[in-house]
Length: 104
Image 1: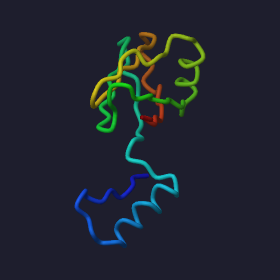
Image 2: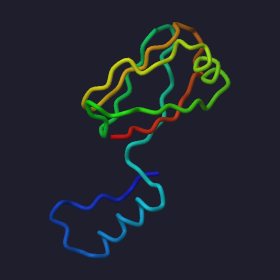
Image 3: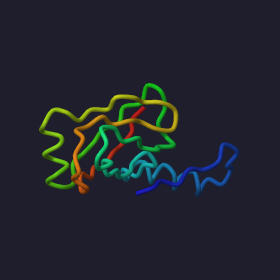
């Protein structure tokens, strides 16, 4: 769920209140979904709200993703402005899908 973000010069109080209500309801522009690249050992995720020092949090959404997570080979190996990289097992499995949230 995306959140409304007013511009820095916004003066309409209703729009500012809407943005606060969105945040209080748990909406965020720092979430998404990613499927690990089959036949590769890394997957880069474009995440505009990601920056150096951010913390990506992954949640498995398929049995194959849960198995990858429990294998101990999946980890976030790099975080940069605009993206993060996941290192994982090199598998032909195509349904290793995760939801993510980027904090910080």
